[in-house]
Image (tube, rainbow, N blue to C red; front, top):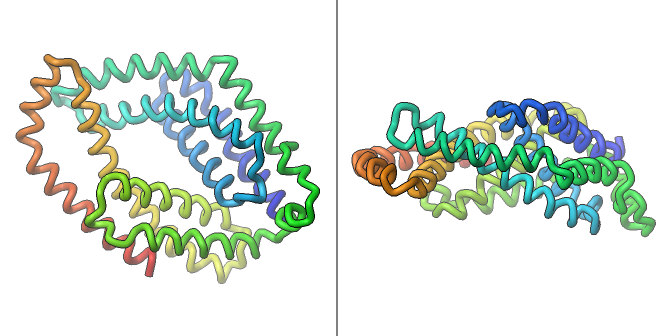
Length: 275
């Protein structure tokens, strides 16, 4: 299979997932919202994976619109996770009120003309965007490269980048750790895209790495969720903030211990990923 064909298939699947979940997201379903975010993250990972082969001015415009949409989805999803992790605690009420407001804004965005123009334009771009008509020799050669060749080379490069970024994970600050998490997601999805595109014997090694990536992503996700929850609690109203602050003092030591444990587990997992 040519890279051009594989790319179209991957992005079509992502956009179909977004369409399938649209109605449920607008109805307030947290699971559908999460699935939509995953589909869009996979879409961005695929475009980054194929890189210069598909990059063009139209994608630059569409990416800016996707950033707008992702901000609405992310704000509501963060509150869904915060609510789930705060059941019975003082801040739960504030989180639910904030979630209702965030969801109203998300619903307006998903039903707007701006959203539908972006969604239709994405389909047009996948099928007949400027990247498909690049006539220079190098662009044509890139599009014609077999998936087995391109994916093997690109996966190795992304794995090398993650190896560099994840060194010293246990002592990293929030920003660097977030970058490791994003790189992990991208590599994970790229490996999943490659299933069936690489020879079975070559994919076996990547399957082992994929298993560890999923575990590492889960651990770093727990750390991220805890940090987001604290930030959301700090933005609560004054009266709620007083209650939350008192509660936070009792939880501070426990949170630090939990963070330390998660970082140790993450570091151990990433040693397996990077070899």
